[in-house]
Length: 344
Ligand code: NAD
Image 1: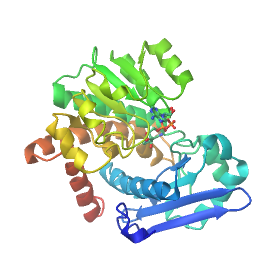
Image 2: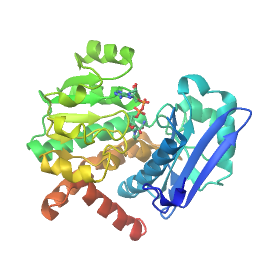
Image 3: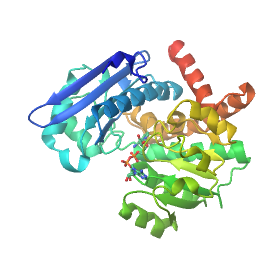
């Protein structure tokens, strides 16, 4: 495989392949940019179909972190790591310790945290071998509730811009994925009076939101066809693609998943269908914002900073209208400008 020619290679500063015989660790760490500070971004554990799929994921996710951190006004660069394997089978103390030692090899150029299938407990084990982790218990902790808060406020901003109201009551929201973030998001939306339509692989999570919030459960592939106002992708990436886009009836796409668009051209394709897209790395920055307060953690300060996502998104939406450009492209332009200006 010609790594430097890959479609998703974007002059990443460093891509490191890590393995450890004894624990079976197979991981890839991608440092996309350290221009604004050490590269910070979570670690994802996933049973990738191929190594190529894992490389693509880590390249795309780490670039997203550079843009996300810049857009959120954080003095942090962008990086991400993936551990390859089935989380139900491969997790062990040895494996997370080996991952911690691998992080030491980057000497602080990359700082890791939680992402899909990685808990604060896992990060605590990594932390026994390295200081280059964040989002640790007793400090900023689990980022998911803050990601959910930011996503909820982002949905409110999108509703304000597209539907000209501050009131979510009665609006129907399709939520795909009831994991760490999705469950908290359901709670916010339910409290605001929204009607929930949900899907997940996990029956327990489905039962929980059906019982607690009266959510309507639909099949995994039916979520796109729902007659809803908002589609909130909160599972994995690339769910807006050639086979789903014409099925989306929502007027707004706003959720916490990373890399929601399968291709950059789907940004414009959403505009053509009259759908307002809240760029993923802007709306889902709540967790990383919270983590950025790790040292001298103060929940009020972190929450106030997460709340800025509302105005940041309104700004992106109105610039997109003025410039007649898709929202994702506008967000990318702003993020690149911030990076070029050294964080300002
Ligand atoms: P999670 O692993 O806790 O939850 C993911 C959920 O999606 C699980 O319940 C899983 O069963 C479900 N799922 C998987 N495939 C599905 C499918 N095809 N259809 C429906 N549901 C499916 O992960 P999370 O931490 O809640 O993160 C969710 C998304 O948000 C990810 O894309 C992640 O990268 C992104 N994100 C998370 C955070 C955070 O703070 N955790 C921050 C920023 C972005």
